[in-house]
Image (cartoon, helix red, strand yellow):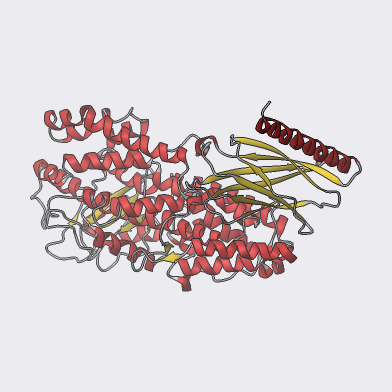
Length: 630
């Protein structure tokens, strides 16, 4: 054997001897009671798992701020198990510290959950759901919910550092003047779509294109004329829903027109009429033929049987070109003896006069049909921009951003709110880029461009109040507590009450008294931040004094992000699928006198083939949901 070989063999033997000595010493220390072993399980998500990740270090920290030695793992799986030895006097584990070693190629790593089991079999759960992006350490709190006043010492300091870090990531900006505030800059990785959500969106967008353009859409566009075209394109887009069948059969009937104000996509516009406004000079003589015999219009108003829908918010909104048209109509409706809500008068502008006639059910068939289409076209725009975008999406983003900025991950309200606002920031960022931008989808399918869109949302924000987001109050304010067959109200009240009861039970666990609410600096900061984010702060609470105020406040946030959004979003394809039922735009000017409209004029007024396709595709994509969504 050569000298080099002998030297190498000697070195290897020496290393083995040292390792055995260290192992024996470790065993002696453990058996002498000086060390304890904690079993740690680290989980990540299969969809974000990668073997090409930098080395990760993990440290346990106990309630006395004692730290274990750093443990390293680089054998990456979706679940990793570690044994960590600590001193015998180590206390309960309250923090896990994660660090990522920087290599030439930086790879982000996602930690879903960490479980720590003590020698006495006590388990400590650490819900993480966070990314390690750089060399900055990440501290994960043990999952038990705690108010800020429950923390002291180093945990209180770590809690404050957590919020300061997030306030640097989640910064406010005003995307358009007069809008509720939104997140500034690049979206933090922790609130971006996960891979499943990304795949779902991409798949749905591809399907909407495949089933129309690559399928039968072009063939239908060339072979079908008139109303047949709008009916046929639905057949090749998706299987028919029973509601679509009903809409296709009865869309032109007055009862179906009125029913949609109660239970369609936009069931928030209708309100009880207490007096006929001067700008809408409907007289008894005009409508007496549609009322109960022997009863005057004023008597029906007094009896609570007259309702009104007013699209004043669209007054003065500029159109995107001279080739599309927009009005701000008013519609008077009547609850008849069958308890149906039916239209009895329509005016297509906010200014009465010779060039703004009041259309009636007794007018020419096509006059009346077109007048109803103009109302539904206005309703489409207000629904999408105010009822849907502003009052669910944009206000929910304010709650989500404020939550990340002001509430620690261990705050019970953070844990309560997060599932309901999940992905809102990411969805809204996509909407700002694809839907409501200057050249976005809405500019292509409606009568307004970016400036018009902004004006509508700005007007909606000006009238936005905290009370307008409280479901029971909105029903009462519109005088809609007793109208029959208002299923949106009936179902909504049941869901509101269920959410309120659940939130109340949670709040009572953590807040012993009203004083506990007042002393919670994080919840007070959250409420103040939401008020600032709404950009209309004097109409939103800036602090909360009682447990009941907190319960109602959180119910508002959860209800509008979940139940209200579902009510005004997921029925879009069924109600908007038949284009004449809710035209997204109008391509001919509104008639300025009666008796000038025929079927050809109506067909020329409706969206063309390309716009119709885009409406269907957009509505279909927006109404798809993942398996885990309810």
